[in-house]
Image (cartoon, rainbow, N blue to C red; front, top):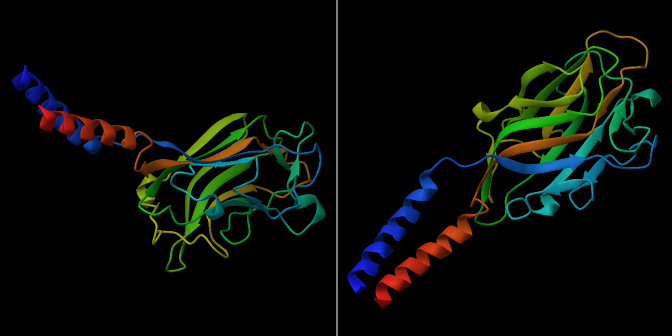
Length: 239
């Protein structure tokens, strides 16, 4: 019996030790679900990580290092408002050209990870609750530590639904000492929106929610796996 238990413990220990090398599952690192007073302007320039609209993977990203900057335009018609039901962000007067510095946008400000953890971005998503009234484009942008800027994945977003941009090739990651994008000042993970031609103030862009998707180390289940591995080793020694 002791030999059998010994062999089982070794197999369990080896199996657990090999599990972390498998591919990591993509999870939601940060998400904002808009909810506010119907037709009211989203007057605050920043939605903090502590706001009920904001959810972040707190085990990896500190709440103090997470926020969303809501940037409209200079005209009174160009701001972001809550829609008529208060369940989405609405903008009726978008910029008419793509530009990293001055699009109608929302910037996820995600900073350093918690001590001993890290995270990597693989995609970004937005969900539109209703169709737009004009021809709208969506892009993702970020600023590198050397101050150069990058714009990725232009998409047309005219119909209701969820849209995703794959950013896994950008190698955007952060740990507790450094990250591969600028998260302060004129930086952040930039969700950029514009219409293709100028027109009346009737763009009708509504954003129900937006998300940053990626992987985290340790994964949420890593602590459980580590505990099982330790249990197997202790059992082997006892036998």
